[in-house]
Image (cartoon, rainbow, N blue to C red):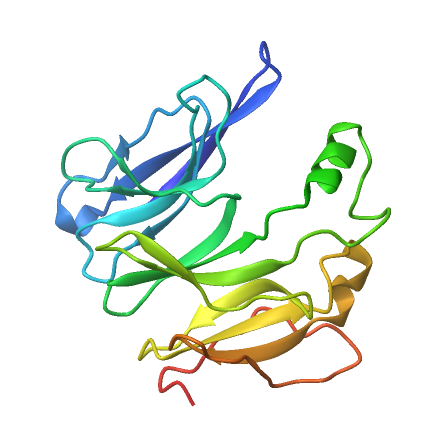
Amino acid sequence: LYTVRTADLAKNAWNTDLWMLTLPERGRAEDIRLTRNPKSDTRPRWRPDGRLFAFLSVRDDADGKAGKPALYLMDPRSGEPWKLYGHPTAIRAFAWSPDGQWIAFTAQDEAPADEKQRRETGEDVSYQGTPGPSTHLWLLDVATRHARRVTGGTDFSVSAFDVAPDGKTIAFSAAPSPRITDAWKSDLFLVSTDSGAVAKKLTDNPGPDESPALSPDGN
């Protein structure tokens, strides 16, 4: 699976769609276009069993307004993609659990009404005023489509993360606030996927600690 990004000069907009390349070892190599969404389809990730894949998609709402990035599923062998889950705010990144039963994802907390108003008037709240909402980890049960929070609060804002091979823990990097000028202060944390777990801080270095990757044995 891969993405192809094209420019629509007339509309001054970008569009990203999903494609699949069949390997020569399985027959004639062939490029197959999987989506034709006029907005954006990105970050395709195979389910561990290889039968379906999930991706982030921006699609128009029923009223015609552009929606937020939401999770979609697709069977590349047939049919159209279908919406799995839409969060109140945009989903930024996600990863499958090893057994394919749940998906971990990050999303920014909802902004207070006054901050939304300031954004609409053109204020860059990333630099001005309060830091803005933090980004946190969530777990989505694929079968029930119910999402529960894993991290929360204003002590840190999550960026990258990695799910352990046994699915019992998630390592993530986080800055002390969502303010852009605090990004270089990020540290590494570890949290259990059990409900109610508290994240444990692993590093406390003066520079940025980012992009955690757990070993195959999870240790």
